[in-house]
Figure 1: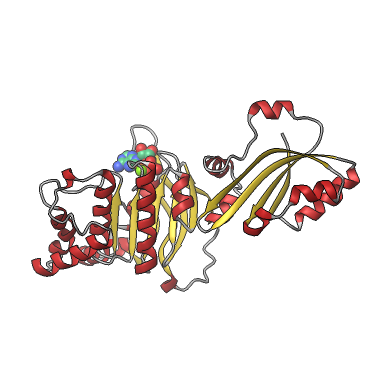
Figure 2 (figure 1 turned 90 degrees about the vertical axis):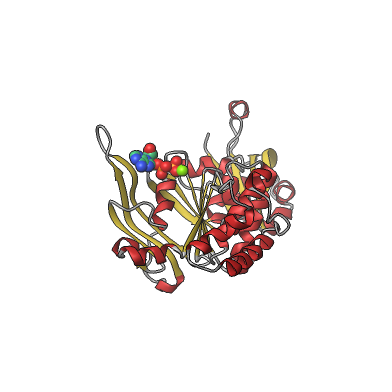
Length: 348
Ligand SMILES: Nc1ncnc2c1ncn2[C@@H]1O[C@H](COP(=O)(O)OP(=O)(O)O)[C@@H](O)[C@H]1O
Ligand SMILES: [Mg+2]
């Protein structure tokens, strides 16, 4: 999606404009980012999905100026970071905070001291820093563990300390680089719930990079798909799940919602047409197949069906094979097209 240019700067938390990053290699340069354009709205939870090496970490590190573009511009809060002198860059960096896959806690100081550290480095007095750290730890549900050392905590608890440390300075943008990739599924879910609460209660813009489509589904509102340094597709999470356009987006969506028939089934079905249906919310409970049979006289064979919750909505996906006269099929197809969000003939 192009920038559009209509959004007011104040609605935009982060904007990448034609950002390229090259790393000199032994032979040709390694192109980690290739003319990336992205606009992240204030208050959004924006996810970037891609395989390892796609350029995600390079991208996210540009938002706190740990990485700089070879070409192009990164605006954070309307400010081009590369244009700032060192002192201003330091204060601009405080508008962002980051959480990491490996938590990055200091092992020799307590949980409370870890969370208070960013404030102490800012020159905030010990008392106030500790009071605010306690508040942040209470927010993440670790108010009882202030005197523990990181080594005494589980992985999920360590990540919650990481989140407390990140939010203690009230950042405008919270950056998450594979923040759940080292966690088991139930801890991942708790971490996702917590990040959603941060977004909801503090209005913090959250920028997530991950290789897990489940994280995009459960956490994000918007998503960009990256491949080999390029953004190949982007949109609302719902749109990309309902109608992934590129093969790579389809592959990521299919890790959550199976899109294709198993090979054995593909080989066995032949002759009659296959239709792919996608439903949303109430459509899920409409007796669509029954109607095709009773009203249109078709024979219907359900080859695949599932439902998935995407945030607070339900998405249904079905592949059916229909048998009937061309006219019956045509009428039924037109009828269906008005009642489901997505309908297409599957070509095997
Ligand atoms: N400091 C660096 N020096 C050289 N190459 C790098 C550096 N950082 C990243 N790269 C290369 O850039 C590409 C993208 O890396 P990265 O942003 O870490 O991807 P991801 O986080 O999606 O796995 C990779 O090919 C990686 O090897
Ligand atoms: Mg990475």
